[in-house]
Image 1 (tube, rainbow, N blue to C red):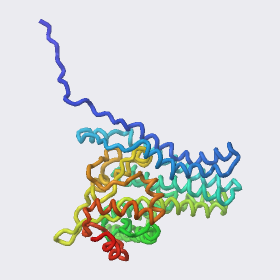
Image 2 (cartoon, rainbow, N blue to C red; image 1 turned 180 degrees about the horizontal axis):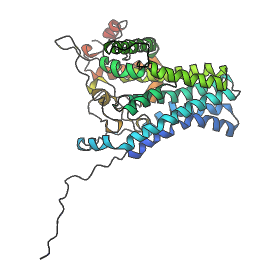
Image 3 (cartoon, one colour; image 1 turned 180 degrees about the vertical axis):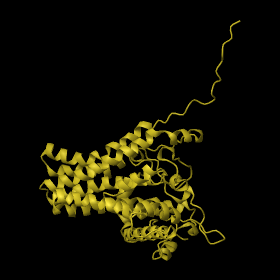
Image 4 (cartoon, rainbow, N blue to C red; image 1 turned 90 degrees about the horizontal axis):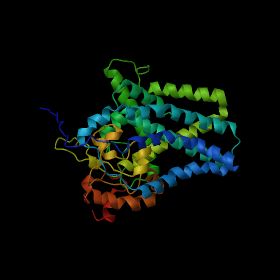
Length: 388
């Protein structure tokens, strides 16, 4: 008698990540820095340097509108498999030297070409946009626990001189998010141009205070290589010194301007990610734990591919240890009407931002003023205006 071994049939086929290879798009983002100069030489027109800028702030929002949103989630049973898959980590590792190369190329191009002021400005905005991607990658890597990823976070944050973000974001912003105590959470009625004056210095002060406290607890000197703010700062110093020695002191204003715009891209992201949302206070006076509804979410396809799912910000803040490929969409969350790059443009025009977002904020919190983080200077006016 022949016996045939019957294999048990799995009730569910193995999970296949349809977005797996889409994350490789992030490796092409730094090519925008070279695209402008190549187009300039090909077209023999310096105005071509503005085409990458238009792509970032006009083309990407249009692609988001055309491609729509993706609300799909990996099943929880597949998350351990996704988190363990080294492919996703290797994409982030590979991007670090590519972004460094893009930063250096920007400086070299500006230092070696005789550009009119508008060509110089276009390179500031394009190079600064790439610097913003440096900070975004530092954000993804800095949340991880492996020694390699944490050091890569410091390395990729160094070009624009924003290494303190490694401390400020993880230990400060995630603790205080969506409260009046957080300089990186914007308030209802606060324009981005007021917010930047509060956010950038406030974040730097908080980072230094947090790191100083840690070193004191550990019995280590503040001014030493144990200081995780000074570590990336020294990399910045070495990089900028090398570029100035190579290209001349004339490149210094460009490095400063490009880095300022890059760091303002982080400010822009912080501004839109938690606008007006407020965590409630518990009976003991402490704030409730951060939940998905304390962040604005966006599932727009193209921009999420480019920024490692940063726009699924609700799940990120509720579960900061999750890797980008595992971040989830939740129903009934505060939703942005466009991806980040489209919302940046809206935010830069305060009257348009308030028109677009204030009604969405009120709907998200059920018109409950106790769930709104108000700009204190605007609170009474907004309460009257919206009948709260």
